[in-house]
Amino acid sequence: MVRPFLLVSDVDNTLLGDERATKRFADWLHRMRPQVRLALNSGRFGESLLKSVASTPLPEPDALIGGVGTQILIGPTWKPLAGWPTATAWDADAVRSVLTEHPRTELQPEQFLSPYKISAFAFDLTAVELREIERRIAAAGVQARVVYSSARDLDVLPVGVDKGSAALRLAAHWGYERDQVLVAGDSGNDLAMFSIEARGIVVGNAHDELRELASDRVFLSSAQYADGVVEGAEHWIAKA
Image (cartoon, rainbow, N blue to C red; front, side, top):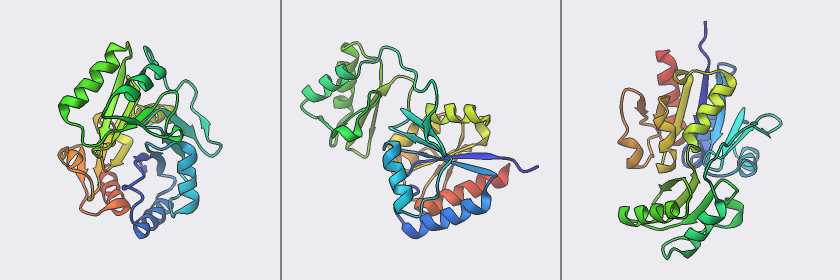
């Protein structure tokens, strides 16, 4: 019996970044369907991701996880998954105020924000500065997860909502066990996907913060961008 898998992959600098590699990935996925379902998992929202599908060789996915896990859309109609996200002690306005007033953060444009994702540009934050931002958010009475990546992007999300928890929620919706879930990424905002006990794929062009995760559950691809996703997926599928 052929074992089915759910591939949940970051988009920018993972599936996108090398157009020929993206095309090879699309060809590979076409050959692997219906054994492999694809969910795109990005800091961008669904509308932006669908524009990339229309304008690049990216294949049409079966689901979209947008806004760093705050949005799950099920194809082909792209309706939101009912009941997601779940958030308690969350106050988007309070988070906006903290990031607006902090001297090291600048709110990103409105198209990158949502009721459950408040993001800022914050260049080269130190660990001390990051802890201070987290302290200010907590002092405002907000239970939040702060995700910092690429020495620039600061995302504040409700506790329990991130790229990893959204991937698990989608997997549960479709009936996949954790060891049937493959996750792929390249940077710090993908770290949550590698904490859910799925089978990880770190592409060859990934930042050190992901490459340090190498283990018996995380495969380090030698190939870059979408070629690395294929290399890792084939590694895990062969082990099934």
